[in-house]
Length: 174
Image 1 (cartoon, rainbow, N blue to C red):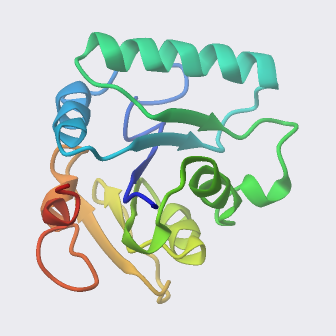
Image 2 (tube, rainbow, N blue to C red):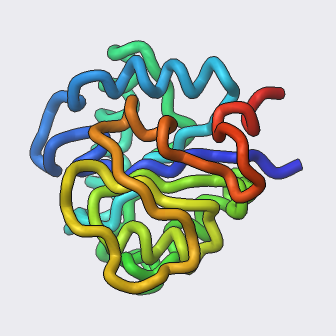
Image 3 (cartoon, helix red, strand yellow):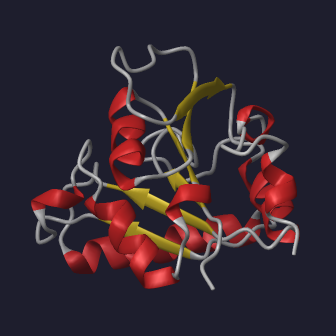
């Protein structure tokens, strides 16, 4: 059975930028709350110029930071210089690969990102919606999904409305 998941962009959602060595405020607690509802949280990024070994080391450090803050990531997937071009946003390849690997139901899953290309990738992958953090512009075109804005990761579930209505967090109750 496929799961509803939350995909999160690494820079801008979990950490300030790719050189950051600490999580943004509230990230650990927000991920812990999602865990209590059995929501897989998969961290993604295509914004690193890393080889596979460096990406694996970075993923380990990110996992450790989240665990130290009280949360747990299901996986960290970073597009590397060896990854297919389809893994670069606004293409949906990274989301599609993560969904196949983890048995994710994309039509009920969401992506939390920082810019219009994140929303475009989520739309092309068939996600239910995307939440963009901050006050930047939303996509100028219709990307075929719900696109909302939130202050930070902890605020995002407030604006995540499932296609069938109701509250997103209620969809994840087992």
